[in-house]
Image (tube, helix red, strand yellow):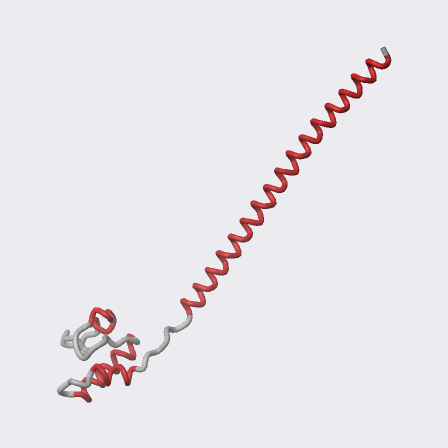
Length: 126
């Protein structure tokens, strides 16, 4: 009788230990999973901050200035009034930081350049 009771107690202890270990493994797995998810979220937040700060820096930096003198000289080289053309082109280039390619036309390449008009409503930029 004593031996049977000891075996039952031993089986109960073993079963208890088994369920305890299963429960402990489940808790450890949940902890590791939550830790990995937390690290992933931290990485995503850090990457978002990096992108946001880079875009802010990009937005505040002025665009590179072009050589208005050279661009307007090329634009006005075939003009019948080159000095007047270069003066108007220089004003437009300084405001828009853009000069359309070629000696005429191509206004769609620089929307700001194309939108400037004189007091009379005519296009200001050659």
